[in-house]
Structures are given as C-alpha cells and as structure tokens.
Amino acid sequence: ASRSLQSIIYFKKMRVITWTKINVAAILLSSILLLARTKTAQAFPLIRTVASHAFRTGSSTSSISLIRTTTSGNKHGHPTVVVSAYTRHEDSSKAIEEDQRQDKQKGPPYPKIGDIVRYYDLDGGSETGQVLVGKIVYISAIQSPNNNNSPTEQQEWTVDLSELDSVGSGYYAEYSSRTAPKKRTSRNVRQVAPILAASYVRSEDAYKIPMVQTSTSSKEVPKVNYEQYKLEGYQGPKTNIVINDQVLQSDLIRYEQLKVQLFRDSAILGAIGTVIAQFTQGTEEAICYAAGAIAGVGYLYFLTIKTDTVGQPNEKFGSKVSGLRFLLPFFLVGVVAIRNIQTGVDDDVIASGNFLSTVSKEQIAAIVLGFLTYRIPLFLRQLAQPLLAGDSILPGSAGIAFQMLKEQQDGAISSTAATEQLPTAILLVCGPEGTGKTSLVKRFMEDDKEHNFVLPRLVDKIAEGPRFEVMEGRGQILKMMDSRYALSVDGILNATASTTSGKQQAVVIDADVDLARQLLALASSGKPIRIIGVWVGLDSLEKLRDRLRSKLASTIIPSGETEESIIRGKIRKVIKDIEFGVVSGVFDFTILNDDFEQSVMELKEASKYCFK
Image 1 (cartoon, one colour):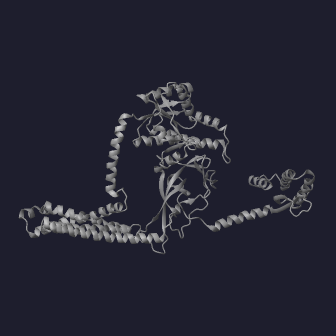
Image 2 (spheres, rainbow, N blue to C red):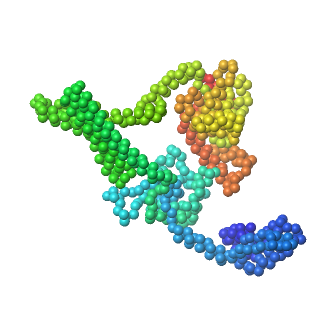
Image 3 (spheres, one colour):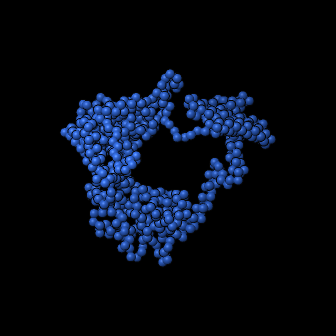
C-alpha cells in the first residue's frame, strides 16, 4: 500500500508530501493489518518494530514493500515481523532507466497484420502531412524493376492500411463497412511507425492510443514506440499454417503422376478417335481430328506450365507462356487453310483473300472434337473415383448437374406443400438498445386478446439438450435469448402450427440488428416467411443517452470503465444500427417512442399488415 501511495505521489509530482509522511502512512496501514491478524497485546510490539525500522532508513526510503507475520521458528507461537525489500527512490529511477535502455536494445519489431501504426497524409498542410492512425490489413513484397532481387539487395515491403477514425479522448474506431473501402491506402513499410501500446477497448468499440504533446504546439499526436519497423531478416507475414514436409512431398509426387496420366490418356484417346474418324469419315477428317488431339495435349502442357510456376519467381513468365494455349485451335485452322490452298482451290477464293473459307465445316468439326478429347479422361477420372469408392455424390460439373436435378425434384415437392400453407408472417420489431422496443412488444402481446399473434418457440438448452446440439450443429440456432433458451429457425416457422381454430396467425419477434440481419438472410434464402418490419427509435440522441444512463444506474460498471465511456461505446453502436435501419429497406413503419401509449397504438396499426 505504501509503494502504491509513493508511486501516485511521485508521478503526480506532489513534492509537498515528504517521504516521512509516506512512512507514517505505511506504519498506519501496517498497524491495521497487524491488528487484524494478531491479538492487540501482541500487535503493539510489532508496530513499534515496524516504526523503528522505517524511520531508521531515513527520509529517502521509498516504502516498505513487504510486511508479513509468521509463527514459524518461534517456540512460543508469537508472530514475528519480517521486513524486507527496501528500495530507495534513487535506485528506483535507475531501475526504470535500465528497463528503458533494455527495451531500446531489443529494437523495433517486425511488421505484422493487425498492427496499429502512425502514418502521414500529405494533404495535412504541414511539412510532413496530417498525422493519421491506421491498421495493417495486408503486407506484400515489392518486386524490383528487373523482377529479380539480388541476394545483397534488401527486400522492400508495402502495407495496406485501413484508416481509423479519431473519436476523441485518444480513441480511434474503425469506419463503417460503407466508408471503410474509401479509407484504404498503401504505404511503404518504412513510412509507418508502430504504436505497440495501442489496446482495443470493447466498451468503446475502439482502440485506445497513447497521446503525447508535440514540442512545437500543444496539439496531441499518437505516441509511437519506434519510428520504423525492423526489416533486416524479415521474411514476410507469419502464418499459422503448419506444413508437413512428408505430406507435401507425397502430394508433389502424386501431382507429377497425375500429369503423366493425363498426357497418356489424352494421347491414347486421341489415337482411338483418329482411327474411328478414318473408318467413318475418311482420311481428310481423320488428319484434322489427329491434329486437334495433338493440340489438346499441347493445351494441357501449357496449362501445367502455369500451374508449376504459381508462387515462383517466374510466375509472370509462366502465366504469359501458358496463354499460348488459347491460340492453338486458331493455329490449326490456319494450317488446314494453308494446306487446302496448296492442294488446290479456286482462283476466286485466293483473289478474295478469305483463306479461312477454304476450310470446310467437316474439317472444323473434326479439329474441335479432336481438341476437346483431352477433357474426356478428366471427366471419366472424376466420375470413376466416387463410383469406385461407393460415394453417391458426383464431382465437378456432373455433380452440379445432379444436385440441380435433385433440387428441382425437391422443389417440386415443396412447392406442392407450399400451395397448402401460406408463408409465415413475421412482425419484426427492431431498433437500437434503449428505445423501449421490448416494453412495446410486451404490452402489445398483453393487449392481443384475440390471439392473432404468437411469440416464437424457444429451444430449452437444458431440457432439450440433444435437440439443441443437433440444431446448433446445423446452424439453425439464430440467437441465445439467455443462458438457457435459444431462438431457432424451426421455432419461428412452427410457432403458428399449434393453432386449432385454423385462423391465420403472425409471429412477433423482438429483435436487435444482428438478429434482423439473420432473418433477412432467411427470407432471401427462400424460407417461407414474410417480414413486416417496424423500426423503433427516438427523435434525438440526447434522449437515447438519458435512457442509457438511467439503465446503467442499476448495473455494475466494470473496473477500468466509466459510465461515460460505456455510453459513448453504446452510442456508436446505435449510429451503426440506425444506418442499417435506413439502408436495409425492410422497415416500412417507424415509431418514435416518446409517448408510450401512442407508440403502442402505432404498433397495433402496423400489425394489421401481417394479414393483408
């Protein structure tokens, strides 16, 4: 306690309090502890021992860092005092300087994705520019002009930055999803400085940045730990992927075997197709088919060049060379046209200059069929693997076609059932925290004497444990309403199934913005629901701030937070929620909940559209 008191006084520079007074405070606090731990008659000798030991150290003693009582080694069982770890103020200053010196010796860290950094924008009007704070979202290497970095040349890196918005008091928040893309920029990693002391504050939904005043003005700027990152020996951003060398080598061998098999199968099928074309169409078409099959093998060869150079220094060269595969069919048509001219064509065709007209439709068809022969082994190999493994799911295009056919059949069955059952009407009551939407829904349900509206069925996590786990595994749990009950998709769709009167009912959902997004996704995915959206809000942020403040009055504020910091974080979330309410287009009705009774009447009027 004395050490804490000394630190507070020292850092606030309250020199009027002497170290003697601090020792008096230490004695008083120690006395209280000793009286609580021992009998009164035994405590006073201990207090005198502590006092005499404290004042013998002189006025420069900082504090008694450890005071404890023990009965070990005492045959009478009386407590004794152990006083240790005295540290003078001068020694503390030297220790702090030593720690700072060691930190500097460690040097700056390597850059990594997610770091908070300081950088400059040249539009700031000053010599260096406007001081900005951003977060590193991507790191990439800068290729040298000759595309070949020498071993002695240090690799340069560029970072993509997402600018953070200064919201006051040293807090920097991320921009909204609509504005963030406009605030992206790139810098050389040498132009950014790391802010290692930045920390994310959940209640503020922002990063807390240490600030420091500049020497030229009273304006505060972000405090950086180093002016640049360490780049010597930097190999790029680290990844959490663990590579198994044995598995990698095995996959490379399988890849090489697969290439050989594809070349061999394409050549064999090309030869078989040529023989068939010889007996069915004649020598001319058989030659065209064989040329097309050879071009198909060439297509595979150029494609493997692109695949082999992915992630390699010569990746661009491989990509350019592999692009020649698209020219192979046209090259063949040109070769056939030249051959036809050499074998003899009309002079009128040569005079017109349209050499491609010498190629007949049969020859073009033979070239195209021969060229596409390489796809046959690919398809057969994809088809054979699941069939040999006993799997009913087909891969590739065949699997997609089979899945589409199955969905059409299922859709025909579901459409028949849909004609017998109307989509579930949902009265979606949504709004930011503190607007009173929950109280409105509760009053609305109490006034519904005709039972036209029902609440969704909730899943009991305790009573329906196995069912809850299955639904959670399938992604059907939308939200945990509390620690026990959860809202599910089936709970909404089947909420009106229990009615025996046969009349139509609607489901009322008190939702926050996150739940509203999930319900919109369900409606877009084809679920049989129809949403009638009602947005509940207030006409000013000041009223919302007052409601949030009154709500916080009955709760315990976490340590390290203040009422104002929590309210600021909630207000920022409210602004994002309002942005969703405006741009989503699902809310046809808006209620400004200033007059509760009037708001209930407006909600009742909006609910009538559930049955129109």
